[in-house]
Length: 459
Ligand SMILES: *Cc1c(COP(=O)(O)O)cnc(C)c1O
Image (tube, rainbow, N blue to C red; front, side, top):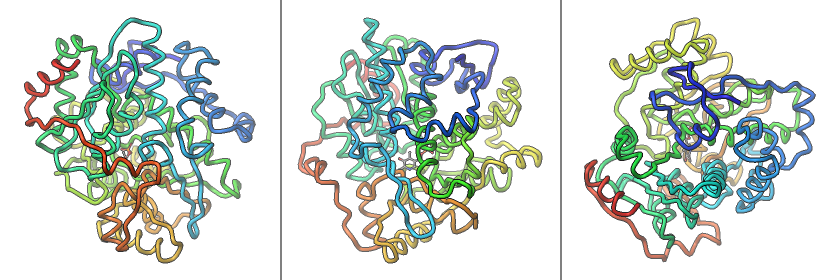
């Protein structure tokens, strides 16, 4: 499979480039030039597969000769052996809808599902070369922990994680900072998440620096993460009771990553009816999809911090589709967004979007109410992100199988849970030890030069 950049389709890339670089040099996002659409009977043949077998089927065509088929199977088995469920995810019934629990990995958020695989992809890649790679990533809390767990202890790999000082939950921080591996470096930046993200972007675009340390990125625009995430949409489809009824997924989203994976599954032929973009008050995607206006405003702090984002990086992949794969038009649109801070979606394009996507926004109080109601009615505790996905269905009235992606375990956000239902949400038994472990992280000013110096000193 060949890949191109959304901003210039004249050059081809292999999966290896796409995975290691993350972002194209022209600033665009990598996307596969073509897709194989599975027929209904091909999809039916996936029905009996285990999660890992299914993952191999879906992922293999995307990675070409990056690994042999056999090696890919081993990598996938290894990646998913660390999950607390045999088949990685679990679908539970909650009232008139279903909840797909994606948080049974080592760091209790859906990001483990893609990140564990990426960690083992790096290991495989480095086994066949004598390079050393430094991963640098910004996190609003969950990406960092998932990336650290996937990379820790691996040979010829370092990971540097920038998080906003005092702006992530205590549990999120402990999951990142209590490890003892010598290749993990946590940096608390005196600033917000956008500052962290901008620091990482600046380091990437400084070619001298990024080449010097062989810098690589694992944020949510990485195509390898997207393909790994599309697998659970397929797996879940076979778990629904009545496949004759439409299947809708509601996805709490910030960066348009997880929901884009669902869109990819649909483009691969999975009969998904609607994908629902569920946002918190940082609702740029809701405004884009319901009113046709993609326009960034200030980031608000919410009880669902992993979605406190204003620039939905993966949205560019949808813009490329709306432009009917015209990469120079996409380049113009992205320049425009950068200059004017907005992108107006015309009626024709909006209609096209709404064939696949609907959206809803949840206020803080509505989110707390969902947590309270689902607990009182069904004795189920939803994390605040999942509650946003759950509540989105109440605003849209769709028939059929309504599935909510549960993106995190509630214990990661104890303050919100306490506020909603006055309950302490405990860590799973096997993770409780982190509460007493010593934490280790550097606190550094929001200053590019200082951060670079720190990284150079450790890499
Ligand atoms: C990262 C994250 C999200 C948002 O994922 P996107 O890829 O930005 O759509 C939602 N919920 C939780 C718990 C997360 O960690």
